[in-house]
Length: 396
Ligand code: CTP
Image 1 (cartoon, rainbow, N blue to C red):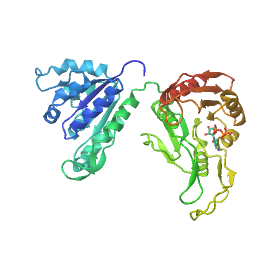
Image 2 (cartoon, helix red, strand yellow; image 1 turned 135 degrees about the vertical axis):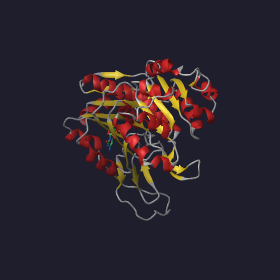
Image 3 (cartoon, helix red, strand yellow; image 1 turned 180 degrees about the vertical axis):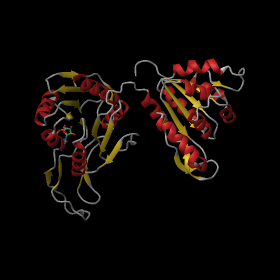
Image 4 (cartoon, rainbow, N blue to C red; image 1 turned 90 degrees about the vertical axis):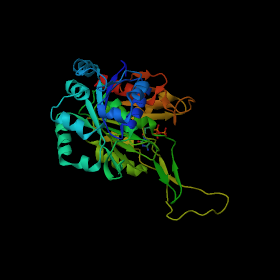
């Protein structure tokens, strides 16, 4: 993100108002300018001063202002917004906007803005399921308004059901994703593989590769934010599933191969960042292997080279591989690019101390099919993903 972005956060009255403070704080940590508009009833739950302190901006609300002072002010905020988000959104604000009612600062600003608007509803479950509210939501969706579905759970009133404000980390992530104005992957399908695979030895043991999955998950998120329809095939890792991405969880090399093959044909871009296990035990023992003797010999056999198989059958797909190397980085990567019939290969030196496996940063060199070699500085894995798609789109 280059220019500082502005989010206008509308806060409407419900018990979840205090959670909107966390959303403000998360956005501020990403250096996003946050301007809060509170409705009169939101001010009954939390004072504007709390939002002012966290956003470091004046909070707009209707409480103490001259009657109708908002009629001019709403236009400037509406224009300033790169994204508007309503957190929490009550049935009342949803109903107002769905029916064209603009009678206070927040509803007029929503009506006047041309920025994307995201509602994060929170209300009693019976209210949420009321067909009138549901119809208003459907109507707004048809007009291009966006919704973050509330969670199900125990609500403040004691009822159990849908209506709990979505997780604040998710809300902040969704807002940030709308701030990405580079939408050059709209209508494109992108498949990403990430994480390690495992090769079971017996019911309790397996062999695997070191991989946190961070690189692949960052690629999936970048593609999503650029507008692509993303499928992420992930081996076992501890990362949270990115929203708005079709995640397929697998364990073994064969499971990854099957999932990749089932989805390959329709893809435009395929990025294979997974650390796939190359060998598996020749014989899987369905009983736990007992500890006998001083030595245990494990016989391994070669497993599928998924990327090589894709290179052999690819048609329109742009195929990107990774090369994890401990020595002779460029030559080994060149060799893999050729052998696996790739369009790009992202080579990384796994011996580097400050980057690599569990780190959030990476230092890579991208090699192109046409012979171009692009060394990149150390940067976040998300930035590497951005550079990769910038390059692919420039050459398309
Ligand atoms: N790959 C794959 N299937 C495998 C091994 C690797 O699809 N069985 C893919 C990886 O996802 C990566 C690329 O091939 O995109 C290169 O992986 P890497 O582990 O660097 O190379 P290998 O082909 O396994 O060769 P080597 O281990 O000898 O370096």
